[in-house]
Image 1 (tube, helix red, strand yellow):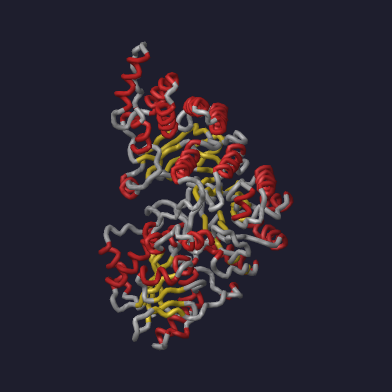
Image 2 (image 1 turned 90 degrees about the vertical axis):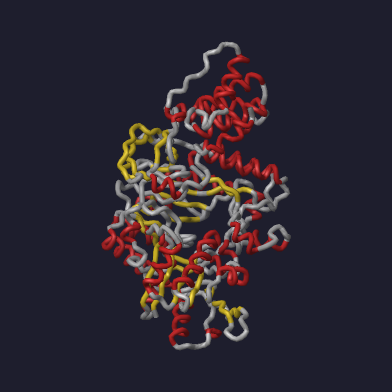
Length: 638
């Protein structure tokens, strides 16, 4: 059969993205079974309209068209399947991935595919294609939903058992995934994940060495499905890695397993075998059990970063999440990893159902005391398939599953925290993400074209000067980078903007009045102009600070700091405002940040413009500190 698989778009053409290797595995098993398969990686194309994509699908004249992903791509998949039917009305359509597995009865009608695949799909799709070829009834194909031809009602077949021998699966079809183009897109910086490379020209490929996870964290969408932990034979893994080196000249490996290794012996064997290949590599591990000697072996074998499941610094929340770790476990492992010289990745996620204002303070206090780890912060997502999602549905806090998916807003308040305070917590976490954290000092920067830069940065941890020759400019992204000497991760004081307005580039002329009242009125007039300069917001905030008006000085100092978070004076003034407002714990955090920035010799953000194509594609995205709405509250305050 002729099959077209569609990989959903997740990035602007020409910029880095995280490639899902599962769809490459499906392509490989279908080709092995004798089918003709075309994999359309939409990340590498700019279709100007739906009609262009329809024509591209129609050109293959497929018998079957499929797509799949996570729940957050629901809307994209719904549209792809709609266009597929317009392009090839007689073709069968199928959809899979966690979006289906998490709640198949909910999404089947909404997505509009003829067949939905539940669970691991490799064996299912091959059997499904055999049924199509032989014109056989689909009821005998395990792990699918289809519509009965006579009654029109959905039919769910028996569950598909997990694939026990994952070594029986072929390697992903890297050529079909357009891996030649993908490996050229990786840069030196990252916008919050763990994909770093210490090479001037990073060439990174993800690889899967195991499936499943034996743990049952309540916020994880894999908790719903049978998640027996299965590992590949390391002989096969190493053969695949050597193939990737020969075929794609990779120098960096991202091990995409949810949990890289449960057994110390397997981890040691992997390190012994990968060390001679001189690759950089990263993986994800639990914070326990892990010893210093293991970390040293990993470092010596080329491991540059480890992602850990931190999630919370509150004992009560960790217990409710079923993390089966303690704050002491987190502290011990992260300290060892940092001391050994391996970069650290991890998240703090807030407003789990048992969260209280006190547990939020516990996690924020831990975050403030450990800036060296560059831990991300976010609100917990209530993703379909998770325990917390199912509980929210049962409790009536999610009233319509389909509307919830279509809105794609997975952050909801199910705690006893009042909604207004919940919003304050979310806003504050976003603000802290933008304005705090260990930051390096850019000592030189040059434009290379194609939204790329070369820059020299001083590491705030070891003071080594690193030159990075492939830094991409991405709107709304916080650039993180990894030191080539000590592997510490740190922020880059850089903001990519759609354009730099005159007010952000000129030397601002401040009012010369000496009378405080006249100066205050003059600054008010300037601040209410379009896109006021951050120094105006700071000056006005300081004037209101002298007057003791917290309702005005806090929004103004906050707005100024969003625009210029790397200036120690802005951090210091905001800390003074917080202290004056009685928020001493937060004031300490920002005063510490001011001292850190002063010690690093930082003064300002560096603003660079992006090219027109990226500007148009990302024009509606939120989160850029230079968006006008960043200062809306500050201006409204006066």
